[in-house]
Length: 90
Length: 422
Image 1 (cartoon, one colour):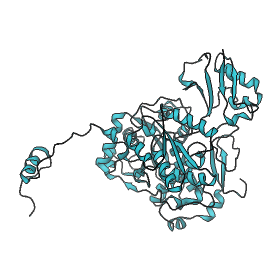
Image 2 (image 1 turned 30 degrees about the horizontal axis):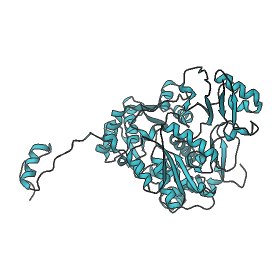
Image 3 (image 1 turned 120 degrees about the horizontal axis):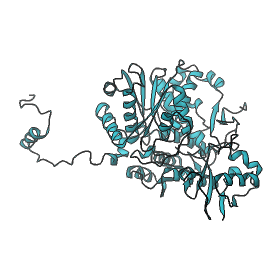
Image 4 (image 1 turned 180 degrees about the vertical axis):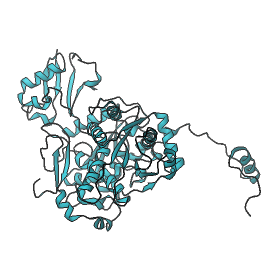
């Protein structure tokens, strides 16, 4: 199973400039763990001190905000995950 | 702040400063960037008298806006009427009710003219040739009009289901419109991705901190038009939640500058029930926002994932205010009530504000003797489809006095006995 994560420009200085990252996580927690272990500098930008996903980071699976999917959503092969800063619009 | 800067970007959470650049969030923690000013220096330059000598438009508050050294202030945006609303006040049992009437804001009849005016000064400063936005309609109108005048190319992104008048009101200025098959939150996410890749000036993405400051002028004007005093309460419609936080910031700045007396103004937020992530959070006593999928006729407020929702909630709760929301029928009744009582025709967002205010008064959350300002942010002619079917089509009558007399007898409840004036 392969899931692709799109990395926004603002985070690429922590990912050696990579704009995509392939992994095979079971769920969101595993995905963030995979990103954090591959790119240790990225870790504090994904989760806050309490381990919660940062308030101002939105995570989409394909076209859907992950908060609209079932709790503990299990990734499927080919899912595309996009990280997007939430501060836009209005 | 560096001494050479009059204003600069600062992260709202970690307080890192970022100078001035087209970026909306902190690269360290992704929290929003906001403009901070050297208020002590501004205090020496600005006074009520000095402001009073200036032209009646939003540029009169130039020291409190993030404007470049050189900018075009020739477009008289803002300084919309503050109208005493006695008849509506009677309905609400309010003794001191006002409308801040941005339904007649120049040039495109919504408060978005303010934010765009400020954003485009910085679009020019940063050297953007193309300006853009994600929009529920009013913002696209404002960007298209002011881009046309300013010689920018404009390309705007909208949800596919917008009101026809708001689409036409963008196309007429020669702007390119990209309709997105999705809701506003889809449009917004796409724009964030485009702004990440293309060098375009998105007024509400990469220029957002500058843009949002334009909303403060609503607050400055309310205070100045009340004779340099703050109201007790304001009722503000909420989409992304930015306007309510910026009116709050404006009042705080005026207090810090000594232009008004200190007062704890209560902030009340208004949303459509079909898109109420902020009002639900306030009612539930939390500041974290749970996103929604919007389903409301108030399309200009249909943002299910509001960028400033968290801050809007905190502004409301910390001021001692509250939030309410209005169903689609209540929104239409709100539009009609405002039109019939005050002669102001507002769009659906204004209907939301009026209908929510009605509830807040009925609940006793706003005291009748206090001064309350309702922010009416857009014009009714843009959302006439929300009123479809409200009025019967009427048959013409022949151009004959007898036909009119018969019509009078039949149709008009205020018909008087014949005799009339001589």
